[in-house]
Image (cartoon, rainbow over all chains, first blue to last red; front, top):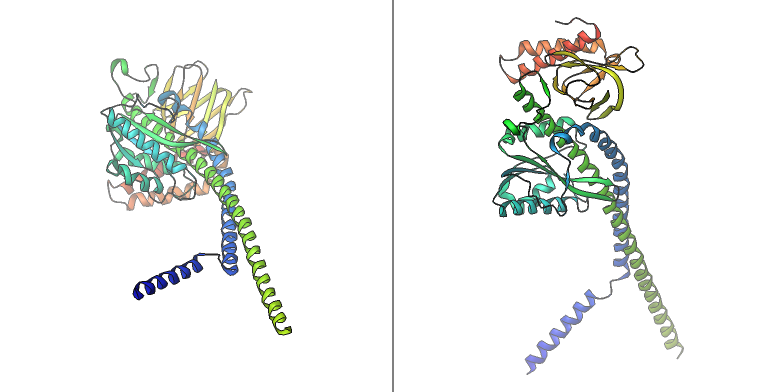
Length: 305
Length: 137
C-alpha cells in the first residue's frame, strides 16, 4: 500500500513537471519565436519580390515563344485542357513527357502535373494501351518516381532556368534517342500560364508525320528538297523541339506565378502569427511585472506589520 | 502576302504584309509571292530577303537553318532557331571563326562527331562570309 502511494506521488510529480514544461511558454521563448517568424517573413517576402521580377522576364519569353510555335498548331492541333479530359484520342503506345520544376516552394504546380500524369497512366492502362514516361524537372521525378516509377525511362537533371531553344533541342534529341519515332504519339503535359493568378494544366499530342495513301499528311504541299520523307522526318523533329520549347516557357511562367502567390500567402500567414504571438508576449510580460509588483508590495506589507 | 518570321527569342515579323520573300531553300533559293503553291522547304544557311510593299531595297537576314511553310492562303511561316540582320554581322568575327573552324576540322579525327561539327561551323561561316561579301575558303 505504501508502495502504491509512493508510485502515485511519483506519477503526480512527474505529471506536474510535464505540465510545467508544456504549459505557458515563458516570455523569452515567445520572444525567440517572434524573432524567428519575423526572419521567415523577411525571406518569404523577398522571395516573392524576386519571383515577381523573374515573372516579367518569363512572361516576355513566353510571348515570343507563342508566335514561334504557332505553325505547329496546323500540324499537331491545339493544346487541350487536362481538366475533364477523357484522353480517348491517345493511341496505343504513348510517350508521356510531364514538365515539372527544379526547385520547390512553388505552390501546387508539381502536384497538379503528377496527379494528371498518374491519371493519364491509369486511363491508358484501363484502355489496354501502353505508355512510358520521360520526366522533365527534379520535383516531378521525385513525385512520379514514388508512384509510377517503373514507367520512367528517362529524366532530366539540373536544368538551368530560363530554358533556351538549345535546351529544347537537346531534350528532343534525347527523346528521339529514346525511340520517339517508335511511339504512336508524344504527349507533353505542362502547366499553361493564363495570368499571374491563374494557370491551367494542358496536354499536347504530337503524332509522327507519317502515313500512306489516304493518311498521308500534308498532301497539298510541295516539298523542297524533293525527298518528302526526309523533310518530314526533320520537320517532325523541328515540330517537337518547337512544342517542347513552348511548353518550357509556359511551364516556367506558371511556376514563377505560383511561387509568387505561395510566398505571398506565406508572408501573410507569418504576419498573422507575429501579431498573435506579440499579444501573447505582452500578456506574459504584464503577468511577470504584476507578479513582481505583488511580491514587492506583499514583502513591504509584511515588513510593516 | 502575309509573312510570319519568328525566332525562339524574338518575333521579327508577325502577320506582316510584304510583296515578296526570297528564301534560301536547301535545294536552292526561290521566291515566294502571293498565291504561291503551298510548299514546305528546309532552309540551308543563307540569306533571306524580304521585299516590302513600298518596293525599296530588300531587308536581308542571314539564317542558319530552319523551315519555311507556305500555305494555300498566301501566308508564309518562316521559323528559324537563329537569324541576324546582315548589317549586324561583324566581318572580322566571321573570318576568325572560319579560321578556327577550319583548324578544328583538319585536326579532328576523320569521321568523328567533332569533325562533322567543325564542318558545319565552316559551312555556316563561309555562307555568312559570302552574304557580306567575304570570300572564305
